[in-house]
Length: 147
Image (cartoon, rainbow, N blue to C red; front, side):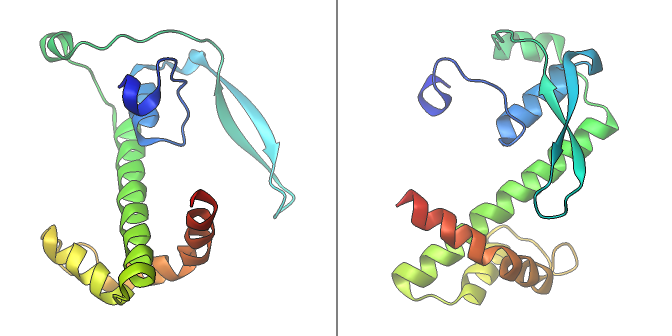
């Protein structure tokens, strides 16, 4: 974990790992709700900020022995985060395949669905394509900033 996240990792809701850990372990009173202004809409939105800093030591053995509980709301958040993460990885792969190897976006997306055995009724190519078209420009800019 130190290699991937560093020795003093701070939980942020923007990463899948942090979302899973914080939602499993955080009680409502640990969060302070604040408001930020959305520059595009001009409206305020509510977000959570940790009110305390604490160290977490996770032992797989203890986790297996004692277990943990995930309620329906937390489960929904984790599912959304996993869905977002998988889609983002797929879309980034599609962009890189197009730029580096001239492989069509459609081919990459269809190969992904086939590789993971995802049927059309579970997740359609059309919905992925529409979502990809909405996010493609933003992801391309992010990739250019990284390289």
